[in-house]
Amino acid sequence: MSNSAKELLSKAVFDDFYVGSKGVGLIRSERLFLERGIDHGFSTRIGGISEPPFDTLNLGTSRNEPMSNILTNYRILCSAYGLDYDDLALVRHEHGSNILRLTGEDRGRGLDREPLEYSDGLVTNDPSVTLVTCHADCSAFFFYDKKHGAIGLAHAGWKGMYARIGQKMVLRMHDEFGTDPSDLSAVIGPCICEKCFEVDLNLGEAFEKEFDCPDILAAGTGKKSDKAYVSLRAAALIQLLDAGMSESSISIMDHCTMEEKDLFYSYRRDGKDTGSMAAYLKLNR
Image 1 (tube, rainbow, N blue to C red):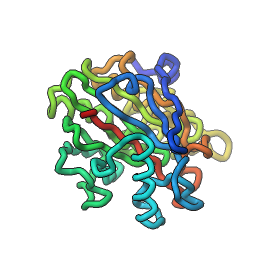
Image 2: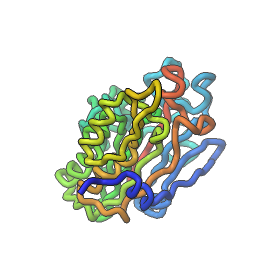
Image 3: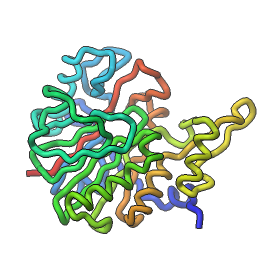
């Protein structure tokens, strides 16, 4: 039986909320916030020192902004939410589906130390390291396995989503920590929504086929008849369900990064002259 994006999204749990501390804005999931064994968040563009067009909390190290500003922004985020700056390990994403297991030996990598190997997913059971990924329209996957004391965080652009990085994260956590899909809580982060994510029609059709979901795309009209609009959130839900997770253990942060300019950076909206948000996930000591 084919999947239905409309049906899946109509039944999905949307449980995000905005918090502000010391002027720094953050999006959190109620599901993960209630889990006292972890700390998590998805940053907004609010609360840093970056000047336009990166105003103000740019956390993307690949942007054309002095690295000193970006590191200061990370320290501001850490100060606002009680994180240890020295524990952060920043993904070096390649828009793929490679996954790394990190330990305390990786603390500081990507910021004050050498970068990590190219990857888009990070997993750990070590509370001394904080996983960090960067986003500017691309979604995030947060995973928590309370039973085995393990977490996973992934950056998921369209390439990673199409390559099923969320599903591969579930499999990798099983291989590394013995995680069963029934052990997991998962949250899908903010991303560009299905009304805004315009792609070539052939790519949209590839998503339709890969996820067996005819309404995962809406075809363009008129001059844009060769375009389509793809639901990354539906693709995320389908692959987590295909990995063996239940609908009741998955939540979505209900925000469109392209539409909400006051809260989020968006590469699709602003091009290279934009910053990046960061997602973080850590086990509490």
